[in-house]
Image (cartoon, rainbow, N blue to C red; front, side):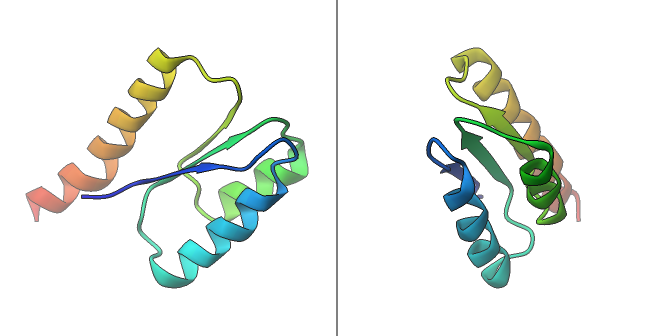
Length: 82
């Protein structure tokens, strides 16, 4: 069971390229992008690439833990039920 937590840096643009690369290899891997800034265009692109979520840094640890748990439930528990 895996998940990608991508630090997109201050501009956030590097994260989309990495997410595209991940999607070319694994379309189902849950991915969360962390970015310093996010605009509407970036968010639309990230969601089109099926990012589980996009968070603006700094991120509260409690929120990050809850998000990781939600991604795990959504993607991995459904696999166990098959």
